[in-house]
Figure 1: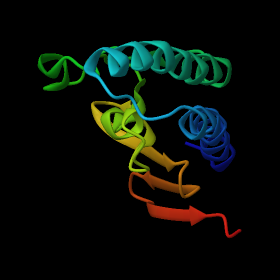
Figure 2: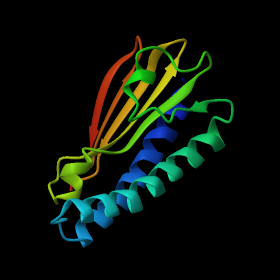
Figure 3: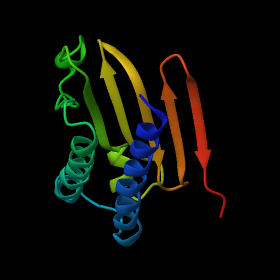
Figure 4: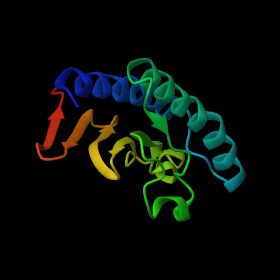
Length: 143
């Protein structure tokens, strides 16, 4: 993956993460399982769609995995072509309970191996990026 592609993905995760953070900061913590379920199903698909659309614009040939919650599909590569795996609200229970311990996570799988991974923590504005055979990187914004 080229450096400008990495920067594009990081910017996209920041955009989605900051949108989620605005929701996180505005809404009070959920106090019941039903409220958690309703809020999750209202926010997660929106965030996932923003990521999916943004990635499809830049990487139209890459597929999208819907196997996030299906462990049986995660035991081996899902596709023979490159594909994205996403957890739009990684740590959703914490998000829904008002705890700042959640992130937006994205991974590109190519040839059955992780090619690049991103984890963005909007609560701390921290970006973690790992690129196969190139290393792992951490970036934060100082206020």
